[in-house]
Length: 508
Image (cartoon, rainbow, N blue to C red; front, top):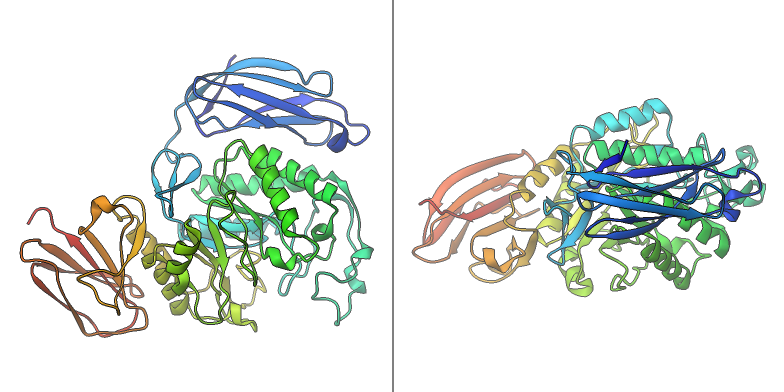
């Protein structure tokens, strides 16, 4: 029976091969997939117990042919398969569109409203189920999470499995003085960084697919510094082996984004040359050109680098965050995603104890300045689990309001918003208009943030009718106050977090 797969789905070919020696180093398998509109070469990987796999994501429908080859008997095969149309909800990978924005490959606009949940994929089954249940409520369409486990405040336990064969250090040897710093006492670990644990990576894959079923993009953090096991200090050869392995395993998932690192500048053993080498491997080995970024703690990476598809930015100022989005657009000429703008929470760290209203304000500031923001929650509760790290349940006030913003963004004409400072608006208006010039004069979105005017007045012209809506971004209401021409007078409630939407009325 001929194989078949839907467009943007995965064709997986499986082979039996050697299990002796070190197959991760000594064996290889590759596949070549050819259709009418594309030819893709993809590396395969060893999945343990003598099993090798090659995965392929087709971008077109129709008849395809595959040929595989490798270093062992049985790796050389060929055959045909059919690619059927994508099913409902399958829009393909997300791409950059209009320079500063995103759309799925089938042309459907994508407005990222993300969240951070670093190691939800490494939690116990009941916590993972709770996380997926929370995500199924539809608050977010992108989630940042790690491949490697994480060691940091509020997340100090070992995961059930590790990415490599071996044993971790005995955490009981850590003292109060060295427990929190990831650089302490790595000599107690005994991992073979040339032998992966396939079960660990299958768990990551399962997580990506579970998110895919919910329509959520997996913004996968490949490296990070918060580590007491030695993963952040591997050698060049070990790093490269790891990068090649994760690309071979994960690249065929359509909902994948690559984040080279969370807080790359805290990985003090890595140089810019290392990051550029990882990026080169990624660009060469990912045949699907998934979105690529790298995230900072203090020092920004040079987001003008051609391999970076969008800027993933953590705030550098204690107070000002998404207010800088307009400037970042000019500086980097790419989509701006503010992936860490402080979290709604109540923990001791300043980055984890802002209010829900303040987090929502920062989301709106990003949106009207032509960018995007990412949510996080660090609310201490009886469970001892923080969403930001473990997942589970959400306790904050911001998720529903972020979803409300997403609903408004989806009504943007064309693809995405850009900041606007021309007439009839003045210096104290924060205004967004559609990115595309063909919609000029048709749509305006104003946001007042912490300001609370009781009215605003604007003059467009005498002929054009505009429908005026007052948006309460916190109470999540939209009040239609009718159609006006000429000098427009807009009465406002005199409260914080109010927006105005002005749309050209075509039927008046």
